[in-house]
Image (cartoon, rainbow, N blue to C red; front, side, top):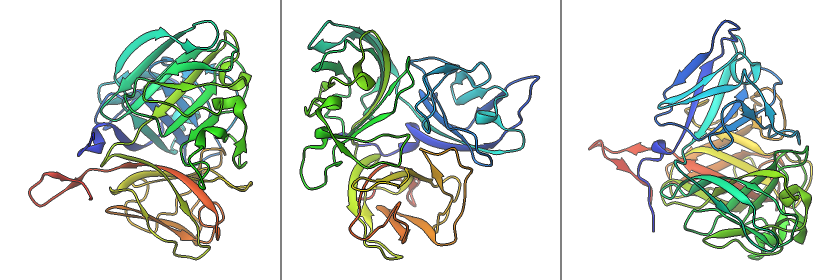
Length: 355
């Protein structure tokens, strides 16, 4: 089974201060690799999340907190660099004097092909890392239930995120643990830009589990409208690097510890069986010690807040929500999460992985 001892080679979080310079761009370094997926948030203001990737190309922006179609933002991410990226003057990515954050993922190997399964074959382009089990797929829908999209991970995906590019439509999320009581996660979907709970419908994943080669689309136009373009972000699990799991809340200020097998550098959490709960985002870069309470929400444009009773702790082999908030720890609440690790260095300066 694949294992990564240095997670920072494939995922990293970077914070910086925006300059909002109308006379020139700002280059951000320190990522540690050339990123292929970059997710930005202005921490100080109510600016939208901005998401760019190397498959769609620079300046092509989508927003996690709305259903808006892809837009061209010439002042957004303007270049991918070997150790980071360059941003223009837009406040979503470079607010003047504002604390900014970017979460960065590496894919790498590029290619193209044709979709398979039901209906007319359509084109797709991709970038993939079979080491970190992450791929970016830009595909064209054919309007047929049963269209299949090659993901190139080489393993069964644990999580898939799809966004229509040409039309204003919701984000669709597949997570293998979305239905905690059984293994039929493919029967359900959730929306990134919503506080809603899981919905049971064959219209999104065709009630068909993804395989080690493809994921299957249903009939809904939000995942496969004919001749429309979509972007998909696909994730498999890797020991020491990534985990896509589920836990049950206990409603207390100290929940049970959630085991990931590594010390997280990033965790996103969402309640599945109830409505009104946000997609909560936490990382080790904004707050390097436990009692992390810098809340950001993938479904909201809110500035970062720091409530006095809403924490999460990162440990060497997992995390623990320390809150009574229903967003993270309602009694009996079911929560999916996705987490990425940080590199731990032992006394001999060799990376170590929690077991």
